[in-house]
Length: 310
Image 1 (cartoon, rainbow, N blue to C red):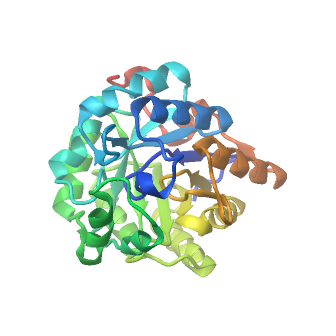
Image 2 (cartoon, rainbow, N blue to C red; image 1 turned 60 degrees about the vertical axis):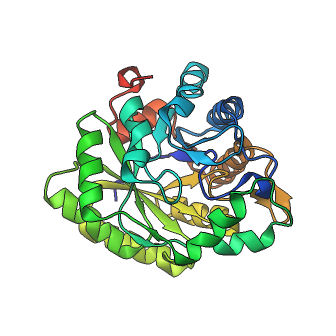
């Protein structure tokens, strides 16, 4: 793993997992997404991982028109690296998932590194009353859902976005996903440094035990040596303990309302900025410095904000 003196904080602003009924603070409208993204950047986030939502219902959407309503505002309001999802919303086609990133030509796009059972149905039982009729079925259908990322799909996405100069946040939900990345690296479809986002606590992926983080790091060290940067995210209550452990190991961190709605036990975070600020404070107390967006660009080898399409 490439060691640096600075920790990159990524913030996942709204995501596609949580629904509006789960928290009144989840940004839905373009204005809310832009405001919270800029606030997260000011709190210390060097990378903003972005999804979009239908403003009327809060349902995830990959329509480029939805992204057009907030991306220019974010670019004008901060200098953070924009990272566009290609995971999209659950059940979308690959064409739908790629549409926003192909239009925006961002510095970074997410890239799921394998298919797996993706079960968030348990979240439905924790919602007393749903605001929109799509929410409960959207969550409950994941009991019988496979998040599809075949080798053909990954290769197509890497090729089409790579040709635009976009680099990737390689989302790895299990150890096998690291080997999938090594396969594409060996073929020369992607080049180092690899920004590996290791993900813990999604039912169907690797569990949120500290030993699993050590195992993921050891596997990535064997496969990529010093050609990668390790970032860590974990779902829900595991978020801050795991990101802190990862940073102590020399890695980088991802926080945000996509992955976790709570600032502390029983206390909903009122913004993404609160989660970023808490993480930055913890890292600072550990003697770890926070990377600026330009420092993160240098570390990740991105094409720069002047070379995107928005």
